[in-house]
Figure 1: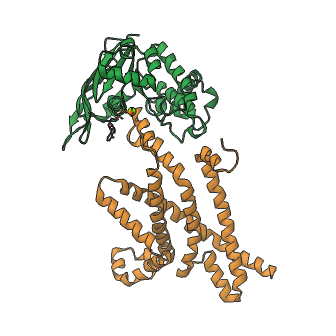
Figure 2: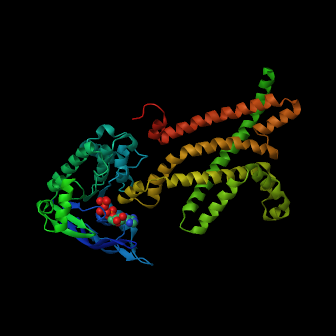
Figure 3: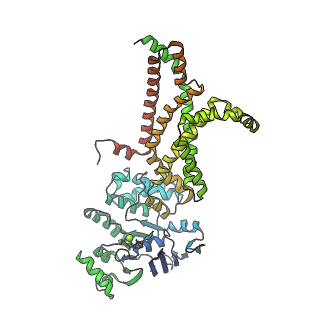
Length: 260
Length: 236
Ligand SMILES: Nc1ncnc2c1ncn2[C@@H]1O[C@H](COP(=O)(O)OP(=O)(O)OP(=O)(O)O)[C@@H](O)[C@H]1O
Ligand SMILES: [Mg+2]
């Protein structure tokens, strides 16, 4: 599904450091509409930081991020680093990005349904009745229709993550960002969440997915990216990246993942 | 026990309940506003504001409420000419206002710590999720931070409310005729301190029983899942 010529996200020469630690060392990538990009890499390679820089939960030190063709404007901060030039722009562009966190981060004071309609109503200003109708359809889709009035503390991790996916979808985002959505789940709950993500991929949603599920990544992604020490070490079709990587490091990583 | 006298005492002391409740609830309401202000000052990036709030809490938590009441009502009387000049003597001349001021400042100090604890307990991930969906500023505070903080703080704050209702009995020392004040008066007339204080205690107990129920109700409304989880049986 291509709407216009602008890629959903363009990241150019992104750098980010935490104190002395250089986490991203110049990452460039583009997510076109309808693409599913799977990002893999060992712990600490900067995968989460990359996703968090895309929606500016971390402000990158260098490089640019553009959402749907619009570059996020940052300016130099006194004493080093950068800061948003116009916070309202970031708030606006973030609405095009649906973020799903490893630890769900559902709002604990709201029921599942209330979680899903919160941002559509209070950020996007949509009528509550309309948002509720759409939310119920989304909850149905992720298999949580019967849990809509439960609080996050009353559901399982797998259910919480599916609720979090519904919450992100409710924003009608142009791009979904998944940061290890199944890593904090018990093994028997992983399948339900992956099934939902697979459905989204089949619908042609644009997604960036950080994951340790190699087989799943290979199956749903159009493109694989292997991140190593803050750089894109290997990029290409899933069969290549997760099958016959060209880079030695990627090969080692993939085989270590398969063994475990 | 002399039940007729108990009944008479009850009828006398019940007359002090409106003043007790009025002092308790006005000071709690005003104190809560001040407590929220203090908690925000503590979190402010402008450090001197935080020091000011910390100092306030240190002083009012570290000294007895009775001393604070005496200091404001009797102590400030020494500065009558100056207060007169400032046009605020009418305030410090009144035992009611002095009591209200002392109770308010005292509960604000405790409340500030409770509110601050509530704000600090809001998980960073939940704030981050809100920001990731484009929420910021006042909306983020109103929709996410404040309600989650309230959920966490409510049990501790309920406790503070109970403590404040009991603390109002101290204002009888500066001539206010609330329940305890009336009890003293009745005893000076009858010399039957056991029965009178027994009745006074029962009245406070009844008030706090009702208030505890109200707090539980509020907890149930605001955090139905926590209220349920706190109940011993049937937890999933
Ligand atoms: N806010 C922060 N402050 C300081 N260091 C950080 C911060 N966030 C991340 N780091 C560090 O940056 C490095 C990269 O972190 P990141 O979370 O991006 O890795 P990752 O690839 O997502 O790893 P994992 O697979 O374990 O999730 C790590 O060494 C981490 O300790
Ligand atoms: Mg990570």
